[in-house]
Image (cartoon, rainbow, N blue to C red; front, side):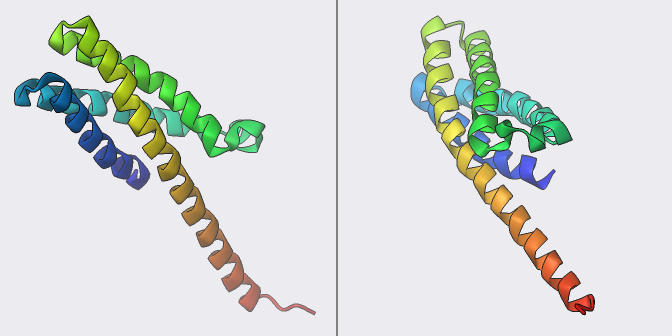
Length: 137
């Protein structure tokens, strides 16, 4: 859950910035920034759950790049839908769907790498502690 929340903070910030720049309207920008990341945060949670399956973890698709592409597809669809429904403007919906998810996809990739690195460091620290306990004869 910490991972989901940390990405949500990044996502809200990017969504508001892009929406406000595109619309120039604080209310519409704020609504887009609240709704689109909320929907994508829920999608992110279930996306993570799916990628935690042992089959995907052991597959060639477990790399951050594969997960990033998978989530980017979901993200583009949600971003367009929310922006279009709130503005009624096909152009703003389309531009929002191209810019905001692209920025967040890059952020997601680096976010995923940081979390994977932390997991590896925790596993190494845990193994090191076990090695000190076990007799090596």
